[in-house]
Image 1 (cartoon, helix red, strand yellow):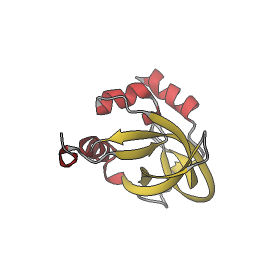
Image 2 (spheres, one colour):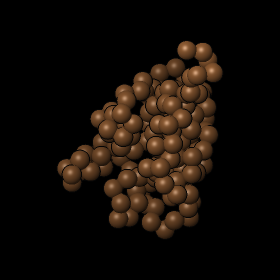
Image 3 (cartoon, rainbow, N blue to C red):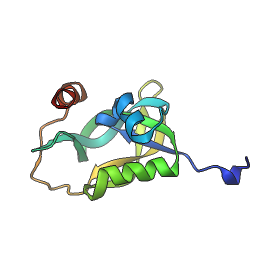
Length: 135
């Protein structure tokens, strides 16, 4: 296989249910290597009437999440489809938790930064487990 035959790889910062390997495997049909990271300058909000979170710019915010590494174009398009029009894919800089190295990645930001349905803070352990219990 030549380099022209290979799809470019993408690294995506995730902060909600996509931190859970079983969810990633179900949706992307793979188990990418994950790296713990922090995204500065954003806040992780709950959304009224929804089980999933969203992020929006916030001057002093810090979000803990994971980077899904080495995703293909097709897998990235699949994430785009799942996130839909309510999210915008953006390139952001994260800090790797273990090494403090900075890395450019893509993530999904809530399109309506003034949405009145955003509130509080979404916590992976609390809200993901509640989501699992619903299903």
